[in-house]
Image 1 (cartoon, rainbow, N blue to C red):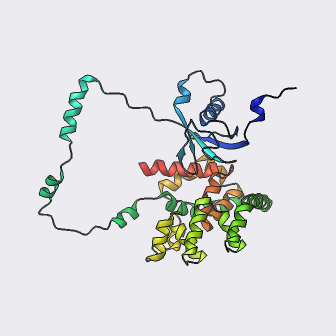
Image 2 (tube, rainbow, N blue to C red; image 1 turned 60 degrees about the vertical axis):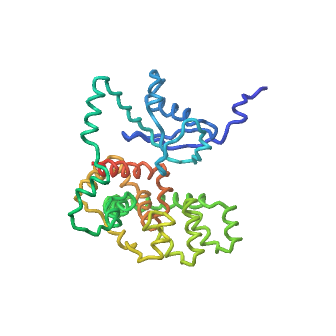
Length: 335
């Protein structure tokens, strides 16, 4: 009896969560040795419900890793792109390339470029020679640029209030919370790498602290350990990374500086009458998610432990909700 060679050497089977910008979502099974191009083809066949009659369909789409917002390389395998079980992927159309200009339009285009050509430094200095000098604080300007991670906290604070009111009306809320908590406990058990835990304890870290660090994503865990080795206590480090979107260098500067903004500044909700919040509440995926106790628990966990955001982005139940919130924010922020 012969067994097919590809079955003998097939890699580990993963289940990834695939979403489209239209709100369609499903689970796709794939082996670690599958190329991203083959995975995309499977997703498109599922999406269009059949064969790909138009070969351009394949080249006009791309897969994006939702948690890292990274475009996956089609020539690489699932393992090489470091995809994990339950990761959330976004299937979207590529932007069509701009049509090349007609020969007759090239001269007119060049003329417009000359007319709109920016002035050189000498021209700028000459034009501004008589202007009074003003001190501009670039940090303030950058701080005013809306950042998704900062806005997300405000959005979550207000969404938690909405979810609590909705769930309070559900007579089965108590039982649903028990089930959701049980699911979270199961996830908690799967999140600790025993080998890594042993390495950290051998380095001298208490087991409870090492477990907490390992439940964060890998890069953040290293940042927590590195900053604590500089002499800062755990709460200070978590606050610093939370305020600075898990950026270790920025967190270090915050710890050594005036520590502005404070963690308390991040706990204020968003204006519930704003177009952004209204657009989020009107989204069907978000509306459905707010009736799920696990979504409420996820929101609360992200507020308490911002470093767990990646986990919830990859969760099959809460991931689509987070994806819709991110998409709505990016759309309105561009406009």
